[in-house]
Image 1 (cartoon, rainbow, N blue to C red):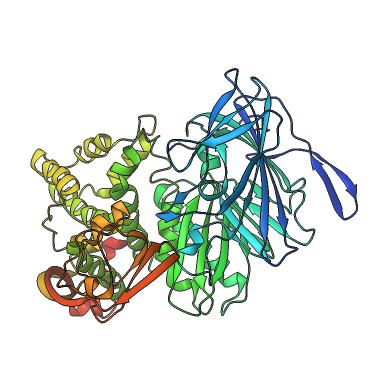
Image 2: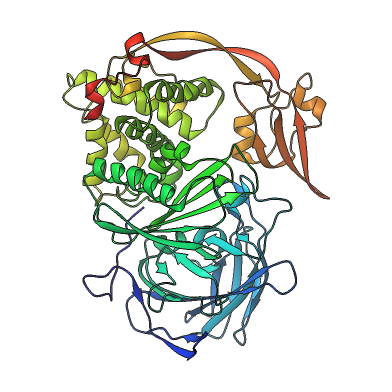
Length: 561
């Protein structure tokens, strides 16, 4: 992915907002956007409808049609592994415009008068039943009190290359007067903040965050740069406590990269509809969101905060992904970010040694039974950091490779470039091991001191740990979204799981057969939840052990580097 390029703005400003006319002391008139500038112009309007109990967010998208009079439209039907059904009532408002289905579920074909302006309207609704709990935050969240959407799950748009230059206008002037607005491009507390304008790469729009409603807008600084917290709900901690944690963690990640070029940064913080045990963080353009159980503390989520902040560089400042390359490299941009999310928090003294080592061990216990790129990528990073330290005699670390990846951002971001950059620091045999680990999933020989970023405060041994036998091929099922490999003598079959069923979600504890597995199946009458206890199995995994000095809390000095 590439950083958005900004144009048509004064040199000292990153965000531009276009003038609107005030229709009265309590109301805003329609936004009026400038028509000049480079790139295709796409304009969105949003209007919440709260009148009938089930809130609806009405949206329109307007753009200039082509000389051919036909175009492909993309409708959000899937994001973050979730199937979406939130876009309803898609229709044409411009004359002589028709809409028909395309070849794939997310495609529509529109026909219109050549070279005419096209306007489409659609509605966004809450497309699930029940409370807001993980993973429902990946759907458009449209509530009576607020909404939170993003480009991937809520913007209907003409087919646009992610690197193409665009002008994107966002008209929020019909929001309720009491609602606050906070997006990747600014807040309603700035002048003209409900009429927002962006010029740059389409990817910045596709990955943008938009929130409005009963949010409290808190302004603060991270180092020398401004930031915004948009928070709603009541918590066991104060807004100031949350700001303090964000300042510490985002600041330490920026210090790692020696980069604080962030003239605007937004964090949104919302509660799940449950008391304990769940959280989510996701990175967006100039922003990230946090969802936290309403009675939990944000202080327990510092590695997650670091993880999402780290994404501003990995992969956003490492170059532009070509077609298919992003999927090939998920182990790198998610797994290596997972590695550093925990390591940087530990290096800064915000996590003690036993907690850090347990975070590593927990992922190593999952490793044999998962294709999760977070888990497998973190283990690869663990091994590669140790290899680089060993082969350089301690003079180089994985940090050097990561800095090189950012330094070469002018090059396309490809899997081969990741391997080539790693190859600057390891020999040919080790590079071959790395490539096989990615392609074939082979286990890597983890060095005893790599769990702590090169500090020899631990030992490594193989131990037997309990494992959950689900009774079907969970990895293939997750990748295909179809139930696969159900064994007739296993617990899944007895609970009603069958090959070929459409999967909406899978939740289980890989190393705890005493925890209930939950599989959501799409059936004719709706979504059916299948629950059962997995069978008990045993696996052998590597685990790190702290020595008595380290366990007592003495942090090795090298971790401060």
